[in-house]
Image (tube, rainbow, N blue to C red; front, side, top):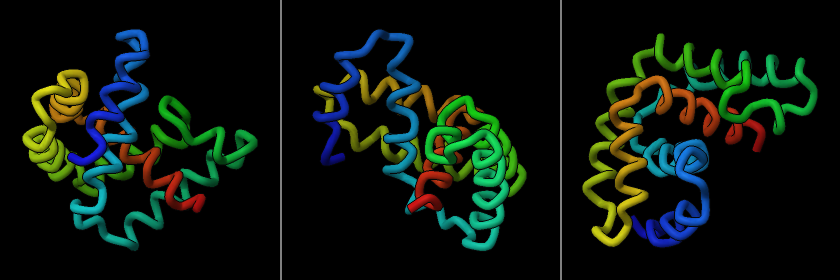
Length: 132
């Protein structure tokens, strides 16, 4: 993982309870391209999520972790069966994290075990990619 050191440094500057929230979308973004996501399913989930985000105001600001748009998009992604492949991709990513990046390794391991959090982070990635 090429940028693990930069992520580690960023996480070290955060309070422990803020680390996962900051790390989740970044780490999931690293594996999103290997998930073999169906473009039609992805576009449909993104459209629904962006409509919810737009109803809240600014879609870019209303599509982060914890937002209704992210939660609903995560539910769509779960229904489409992306939880297990995402966990497998995160486990593979964990093996690529250098030993001198324990915060990154811990965040990846936690995400791999928490399907809900991982899918919500994937939803944020999907929504932000759709926004361009």
